[in-house]
Length: 234
Image 1 (cartoon, rainbow, N blue to C red):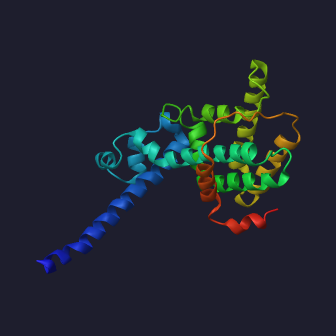
Image 2 (cartoon, rainbow, N blue to C red; image 1 turned 120 degrees about the vertical axis):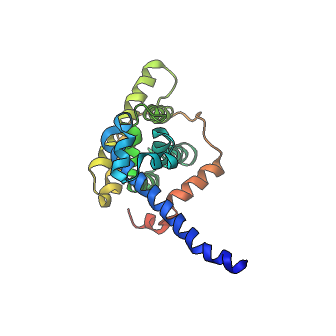
Image 3 (cartoon, one colour; image 1 turned 180 degrees about the vertical axis):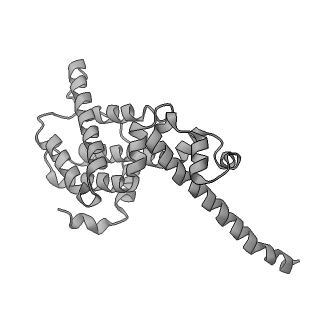
């Protein structure tokens, strides 16, 4: 009986490989479709055609367009929120970035590495997600950044903070779209230096932050790929 079971093991491995290969083809095709058409206009039939997978089989892997979009962007969305927490933690808890240029090195490096890994997904969430569960993500990020910019809660200063937050995010979007990978760090650094050294804004400290150890773990994950690089980039 054991010998008979051994005959089936290679077949199972082949079948598993084939399933993963089909799933990856679907994801690659969906990435092209969503990034070019946006979530709202994207068609599952077109993704099926791009992937060369029958539409019925596609739905076996992803039961809806939303589930397929989520499979592509959810990790990038979570990492973006961790990036904002990283930014806030570095600024509010550890150092004032306005006064400590050295700290900008870590923030700039983390942002540039994030863009290198998630550029397409990042832009999809921010600009191509209308109609999906992620369509409010742009405003969530803006509000999160703006929360620590004004001195107090006055409506006029909150409006200024929102404008500044949009400017910062839009600057990152432009850099992500147009900047070669090898120049990302320099451009992100220049943008953050402009915002934090050319501005006379004072910053509030009473914002909600995750527990320190949780943020530190997230930060460690962001830089663990190449920790020695931080000592060479400035």
